[in-house]
Amino acid sequence: MRFVERALNALWYHRRAYAVLVILVGGVAAGAILLATATMMNQVNLAGFLHRIAGLNHTAGRPLQRIVTQAYHTIGSHYTLAWWACMGSLVLIGVGFALLQRKRRRTEITAYLVMGKSGWNIAAQAACEALIAFTLGFWLVVAGLAVISAGVTDWLQGLNHQLMDATLRSQVSAGTVAKIMQKLFAHKVTEFNGTGLMLPHPDQPPRLLAGVWRTYFVGAGAMMLSIGAAAGIGAWRTRRTIR
Amino acid sequence: MPSRQLQLQFITQVHQVFPPAHITFVHATPELAAATMREYQQVCHRQGAARLFAAIGLPAPAVVPYLSVRSNLLLNGEKVPFHVLPKAFREDLDFLNRPAVALTTEQSLYVQLFRAILGGRQLIVMGDFPATMAVQAVRAFITLAQTALRQTTSSLVVFTQDETLLAANAQHQLATPPVLSA
Image (cartoon, rainbow over all chains, first blue to last red; front, side):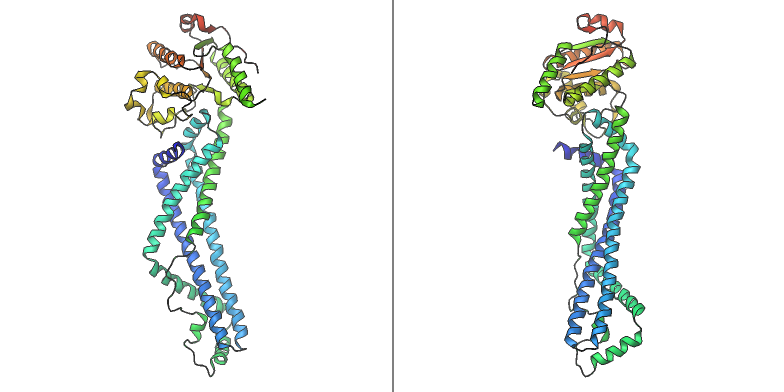
């Protein structure tokens, strides 16, 4: 109880710095959630494509299936990489925050050490503060995104399609695709055309944000580790000066 | 031997040098005082009794600015009941609930002493009183400290160069800092 009281009081005391931190992590969290959602939509689109091309059941579809699947995977791996970059930037934000705060923190760290609190205890308190600040920024952003999730998912779907177009065009010429399409769709009645094959629109496109909990846990871990470790190192360095 | 028993044995030794529930005044220059306090701390640390030692009145910041005075007092736990504190201090709710951000040197010294007492620290050491503290304030501090200590087993050791202070407490004074042996 007293531990949490300390963390909350410290949050309030350093409220200006923490307000900036909350805004920063909120921005990064928004990016990470959008990327996770785009990854999920990418996977849904790929599944739709594979389902439709299997339904066409034509040997000419084989090379197309390989190329398009490859393109989806490329985009997906870029999304995943960018998501991890977001998590990495949370670590950097945490370290930068701790560095900028270290002078103001010196007083309280010294006081805790003089009282016989361990470096672990000090680090744990900083990590607890980081967790509270991250949780606040994160869920505010999630709430904001959830309100406009329909617009957000539509925009992401559009982005997915654009990226898909660009990736495909870089790998195979439009003429080749058109030729394959002609063979595939010859003498067939389908509920979709060539574009609908490559970029299927499910009747009810997913309107939900994806990867929220994953982003929350990994992000919270990144924040707690970086800020906690920085406080622990600060305590260790301060201890050497006062003994 | 269990560490608890070792600690108790060590504290018994400490109490033979510095009687419990009392203030002992030791004549020492500031340099000697600082060196001795560091030495005592290291001895306590070696004996696994770091949590039974407290140094107060150091130039380093000693209070957490965003906690109330009361929370600062209880940061080391409440191994000794709160009511050992002098009545005037314990009932000054306005002071206790105030954030510890703007304490005077004197107030901070009280907080540090009472925190160490409440935390069950058996050996509490401090250097000379700050020059800004008037003679009356020092006398008041000593009186209040004695009142609080009397209900505990803690010993307070004050290293000072002030001859009047040493003379006024002749029965509890030492000319040189004793060696704490392990």
